[in-house]
Length: 76
Image 1 (cartoon, helix red, strand yellow):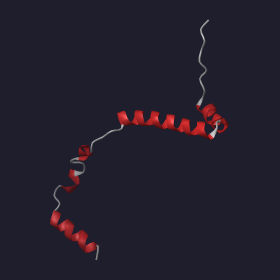
Image 2 (cartoon, helix red, strand yellow):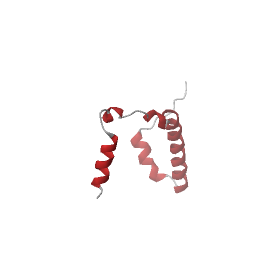
Image 3 (cartoon, helix red, strand yellow):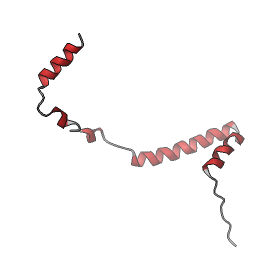
Image 4 (tube, rainbow, N blue to C red):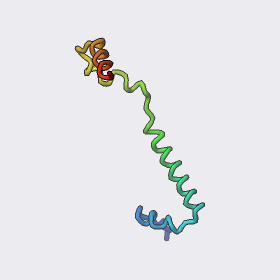
């Protein structure tokens, strides 16, 4: 006979948090934070260079000098 691990549901885990000592709650927070940072860190890193050219179509046919003049006049 093999031993099976019990799987807690999200609700059970959340309900058990108040039963932990404050130090254990902080430890849990650090474990969760570390786990989330690893998951996000691998999939969530982007380069600012990915934004290059984004929205370029908005400026097609626009006179930059006229646009700047209009914006500066709006500040007065």
